[in-house]
Image (cartoon, rainbow, N blue to C red; front, side):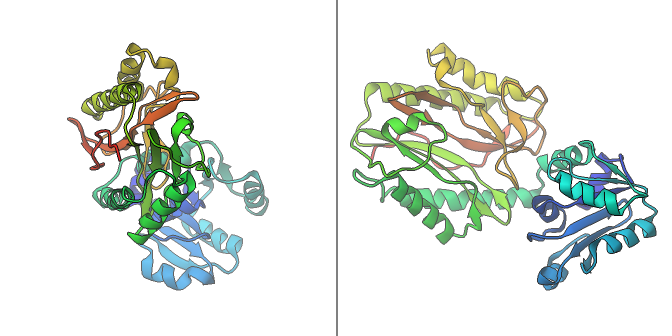
Length: 354
């Protein structure tokens, strides 16, 4: 079954779906571009795309007829007339007010459905990964892991956070990354207490943690992982905190499976951290969905009270952050099954001292 057919199984709020966001166009057609419009009906879908991409589109696009875009609104109007469309749904999460005003000005006889029906249907569809998507995510993760493995020989006293981040990025691209999942985070010493700090010119010193949060993109799909290592020997307190975070993460991974509420999975890790006296030092959610975007449905957070789905890919990333001292985060990501999960992250999690 094509993704368009699956969409209309989830969605019945309009005669037509107008898909304009870059990521969702790629999801439905397999075509990466910064332009184009999908006009999808239950019986057929079309991709209108301009001359810059037309050759690639004709060779790449699956499940939609490719039409060269010359006069967008008249061409779309012809498709509406051909299929008898009277109601058209837009992506409420991504279409701007200016864009919607332009469509409504030209198509005066069309009712545009501006609620969240289409966006929600697409995000629900994207939440459940098929075998091809999982393979891309695994390849992205292997790229990131290979880069990290080689990076270990680069990290030492005297190198800066920024130098480590640049080398990690270089290695991911060298091993086949299409892009970075997000701006790579590399922090050291007291900076590791900032969950989403920015790499600086601070030099690594002996006895400090180095926290690295990073990922690679392969064929449009992201990976995401965090490792915290020590340069030199950690203190007893550093070892204690690391072990608490690792226990909290392992317990959550053991409990992760389809049907568990996102808030319940979060609570498993959070309770362990709170019981050890560091509850106020874990201020973010346990995890989030990963796919064509680095943050997508579902979530493992205190406020996500929905069951996690079979085929969803979710991060498990508890952390403890002690302001002015240090922080520890350990992050893997898993694909959920009916009876458990498969950990897509293969890098070891024992505390490494370089």
